[in-house]
Image 1 (cartoon, rainbow, N blue to C red):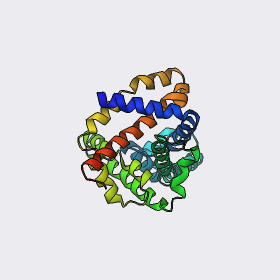
Image 2 (image 1 turned 90 degrees about the vertical axis):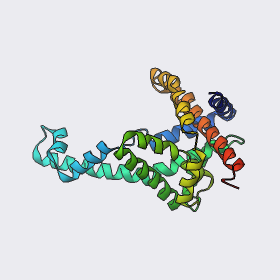
Image 3 (image 1 turned 180 degrees about the vertical axis):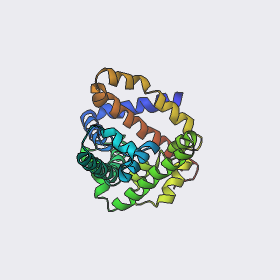
Image 4 (image 1 turned 30 degrees about the horizontal axis):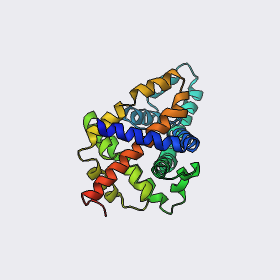
Length: 243
């Protein structure tokens, strides 16, 4: 698609203009939102967590061969780690994600510093960001429980929520979801194809043991999705959804 080609070109140019801060910001966001941080994000994770707390056989099967007393302690520790991971996701990772999007939005026409990714913690709207991002994750998860396809569709429908919060951290949750839905109306297939267009780069990242991911692919992808948001935002202005 021509639009995606243009978005990727603009993203690449914006990334290259402020190369090292973009690399640093993308790396920090990756580490704090998914790099090694276990997050309960699907039905099997929730089931496993429930097993841990219930002390069911399926949970203890993972630690067979350990004496009963130590097994119980291990299950308790795993339960605490799981809870901490979920809380970290809700109260830290999601806010960092919004901050990362804010960085790459600003990077389109300025040179923000890496510290921009922490703006959500000092915007005065921290709890609103936490609440809205929690609802985004919850709604997506619940839709996915019904059927995989509706969950995927909803994930694209809510795609713009963190970007909207990045520029409007105090926006009411319902308004943010409504605006994201309007922005993504007719754009879901395009966004899907945009994601697919990076598969080759993701393969390169794997081949290079993630070195290419750190120094090129990840910031390139982030910058491109910031361009997608800018495109959808301009469309929203033209159609009168925002003023």
